[in-house]
Image 1 (tube, chains in turn red, yellow):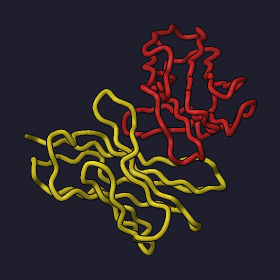
Image 2 (cartoon, one colour):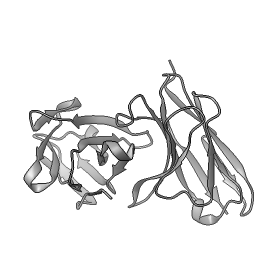
Image 3 (cartoon, each protein chain N blue to C red):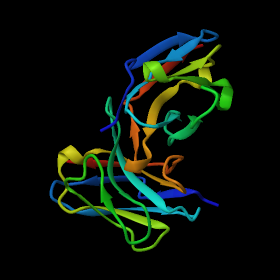
Length: 111
Length: 113
């Protein structure tokens, strides 16, 4: 039982490049979330999903897209990376939404 | 929209000192409250949670929190901190209709040995 895993753990991108972050959970949770964590700003919700095939915008969705084609996976895409997207990205999953289990994070640097 | 405020950004204590971290939320309806902890280099973990009933809730590692409805507060406490409690602590609120947790900005706790 791996819980929530994230791929990759680290990534450096040049401005304008694209990439996809993968989140996988093996707890059969309905809810999945993508956050970004920046110093002094806590966690800010990017997008979330309340079930397979559904997605919704969070607090800071601009510049990101998501897909939840399979219940266990939640993908976060950056189409054209910008330095402002340098951050640590956390994925979380939950059975009911509020008790969330977090992945280990992805540290992304955009130069 | 609901919001969560943590006014202490960085707290430095010596071992065995008592801890209280403030958390205030703004939401008029029923709200569920949480404290999460993030140890250095690790992901967030649930420390404790409040849904209803006894306003004093106990969590892991000797932490507790008190829900005071009249003050919209959910402060985290520990009678005697240890060096291993060094971490960042996040308060979070859940208002069911939003299906989202709203996090505070976090409090970095440094415990000096």
